[in-house]
Image (cartoon, rainbow, N blue to C red; front, side, top):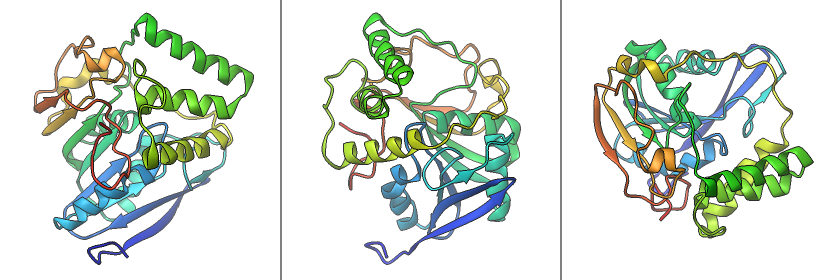
Length: 265
């Protein structure tokens, strides 16, 4: 039971050879939370509470390869899994809140199913097919990540990715501590320990089709994020026509369940 009396309930549903596991809370307009590629549904617990408190229906789930979700190594597509989630809840349309890779999935879904998207909140988002150009300092930490991966050192890989995606690639390692760091290491450690899924279908390029995102969109980017995101040096060739606001104020956009904030400051 949550502090306000709203019960957060678990759910699971099957699609193909996978069992997708998630949480829901509250009633009303559906808000679907899509986690980052180094997290799982637990990153959204505080935000689910906030959404429920104002009378909306919060839904978050673990994608294949994350959290409590289990999957065979079979051909799959995250877009189809997300559509199946909506169908399982009889949700025609929702607001989608996505962080990093979760934001990229939200954009792809908006392009594929525009009638099912009421609005987007994109936090430090990826965009399928977007160019990437890191600074020399950022490339150094990317090399450390690659080295840990090639050596099969999961603990080191987890710590390096916490530096990249929690502290910020140009910030001091360990800048963010406490509950947020513990949660990050647990969520990412769980994902790194799962068997590799080798048959994910490639999603079509979204970078050149952003003018097709015709839904109200809020974009949030932390100024300690990778430079292509934080400095705006990766402008979209065809901007989203319904972009309502861009915010570059928070140091690192990682809405971990810390009890207070959407961003780690």
